[in-house]
Image (cartoon, rainbow, N blue to C red; front, top):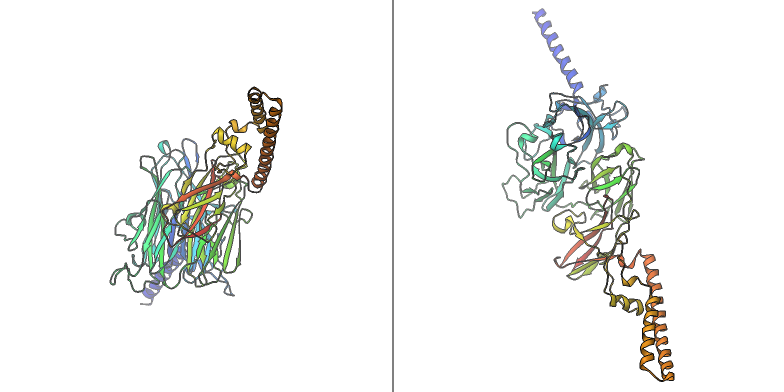
Length: 617
């Protein structure tokens, strides 16, 4: 009996030891309900004809209280912080590795992750990581070579998805992206996207959120809901959050007002605070005929919060993908205020670099407003990189406001145009419809042609449809007035209309460019001849000549004075002819609108005006 019992104990001890080893090797799998977010993207690195190498990038989100990310020292200080690449779970000396990963060609890898950010707000409690190579410093992403063109499906999957209202506990999760290479897909790269792991939604409101993506090859992009097989497992049913809609351009709208929902619905109309909902989206790039080139996943959560606490406002988020040249510095200024009067805290959840000489931020507060400045100076190693940056504002009650923007790093040297200057309506002004908006156009030191896009929206973050997405504004095309108007303007300085023209445009040469003194001499000669033939009396002829010269002298003097005044104004304001106007008659009375103008050059450089507001009476 003792012998048998001893053998049983040895077996139990052996199995326990194996279990401990497995747990130490794969700490991510230890805790249930810890997975919150995932997205992937890939880019072609090289193609030598026989092998094509791609670099995969992946970001993932976890609950920060998962013990793989919750190490503390003897004093209770957390040992896992942004920048860490060695996540030693409870004294384990082996860095945290990813398992169940497949390149889609029967090859697998063990991959190291690095912590990008840690959000300790009690309502969020997130860790965001990215995969990479820490063999020599840190390189974002992992490379793999394929011998064929595909298609290949890169995937990573496991269990322990956080429990949500539309999914049960400990459900599986799956991230995968489609890779097609060569021939029709030659030089293609996938889209890039990013969202926060958990986005908070104020209950009893109409909520909107714009998913942001970028594609370096300029392909058409579209958004759609993911399927159960794409994000969970081979079979089963996924139900998107009740009442939530997704447009093909990535705009999410969710009406969670009590007047719309009903008692007994899965989305209750009484109190939905603390409800957590999983949402899964595929972003596809495609050919002009609509056939899909590749796709990337976005797997994240929405959390409804108390109706009594509105999120902070967030403004200054750039519209459209920002092109930044290697070695050039781009500055983004973001502002946030909250109805509590306490200045919110602004953070970036997934910075593209932890090198302060490349990416740095500063924050200041004044009168309840937070100003957050991002300075980005990419180096040559980042050429061709594309990122989507998630920005978060958190108020003093842990309510969050999230918005994202895209950045592409270009190896082509280019100077951005100057920022447009808003002129009217003045900031905060009350106006009547139709509303005419006016701004001063930009200049471009490279001489590039500049185009303008105006954004008008009831949301200070310009999230929504219609004019929130911007409309092109033409800045006048080399306007040449008729000759009689030019002659009138040159000789007699009466008020005349100004026409918009960017200073980067070349103004056509016409009669208006002929010197005024030459025109006056010609006219004086013609009149002299007419007077000589028509007035025979020499005395009368002299009197007429003197009167004519007095009139001409007065006109020239006034014209010169007017030209000097206009020249001084142009010097202070770039050019008096740079003003651009746009009139809109479809704005709703009693509504406050925010507006801004984005100037773009032909090389992808851009600059944005300030954001102003006006109210239509």
